[in-house]
Image 1: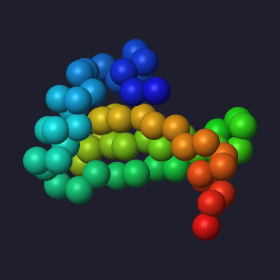
Image 2: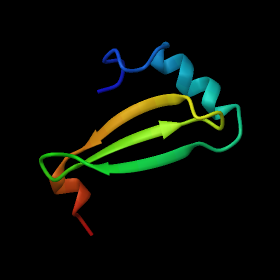
Image 3: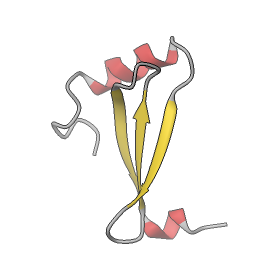
Image 4: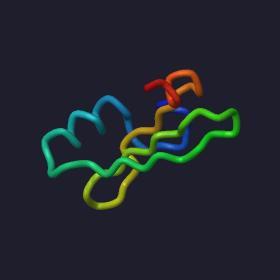
Length: 61
C-alpha cells in the first residue's frame, strides 16, 4: 500500500530519512478482513509509511 497517494512524499526517501532520526511510532489498526494496517509515523507525527499484514500472518504465533 505504500505510495498510494495517502503519503505526501517519496516513500523510500521518507523511510531512509526516518531511519536517521529518533525512533518511529508504529500504530496497528485492525483491517476490514481481519488483517492489520500498520501506520508508521516519525517523531513529528508525519506519516512515513503504511503497510498491510494479511490475517494469516497477523494471527500467526
